[in-house]
Image (cartoon, rainbow, N blue to C red):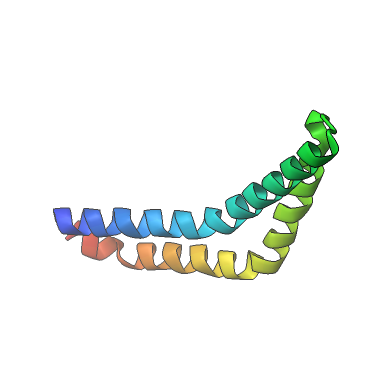
Length: 89
């Protein structure tokens, strides 16, 4: 296994990780910001208020983007398993 193969595999792994986590994290970030702005405008200082919108938003994104996310990780894993003989020899 050459250093180029290792770097390519690490790059692909990080890219897949960002593509998998990105939509969920960005949704949670955006909803947290919106709830924080709402709390600041109304002066409601309830700590647990932001959890329900974040949970619902992340769940909604998982439902909408789930098939794409599953296809992405399945393709990466399949490609990884198919390339094992190339990595060994």
